[in-house]
Length: 269
Ligand SMILES: [Fe+2]
Ligand SMILES: [Fe+2]
Image (cartoon, rainbow, N blue to C red; front, top):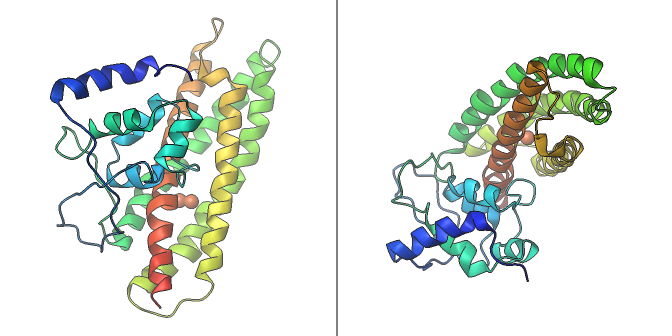
């Protein structure tokens, strides 16, 4: 087994200094109640997606140790830790550093009403994609033309990106025009048709987008800036990094909060 990655050590030292220890166990999906106090109840069987849903700051911990909290969000902490040769107790301890009571909390959507979650997804993440994708496409076209000979990986990466963009736009359209209105109707106890299949479809499309995003990162060497990169090349790599980060947060919110809660409501019918 490899030692704990160095990035975890400062967190663990901080934890030890604070005298904190993991003391949580998993609870039930709460009813929507914005005023309810945040409660975490994590142990080795908690899913990665659930942990990030309850305390979004934990996404930074998972990013530091390379654990996918987006499309791999259904894995337990024990499974995720094992894949990274980490001890799950140490991972839990690091997660507690950003548990409730810590500074700079981000909003958790676990307890927000589903229409509020949907509005956030559309206003924040869908708006981001509609704003950034055209800009990234234009930058990719220029950078691939200018630098493609010296960096042929740009050509393959651009093809992956160009394949992903129309799929994402169709996906946003499906969510906004077909799925989200049905989820809103569901919260008003109205009758909805075909929602279970649509939720399955969305998850499948999320997995496909996740694969494309991982492929982009691999092809472009983790978005490291080459020595001969021009300013636009850097802008492209920065933009792709921001795109990846926003997609992780976006798909996480849908896969680990919105879809499970919509399925739970469907199950009560
Ligand atoms: Fe979405
Ligand atoms: Fe989605």
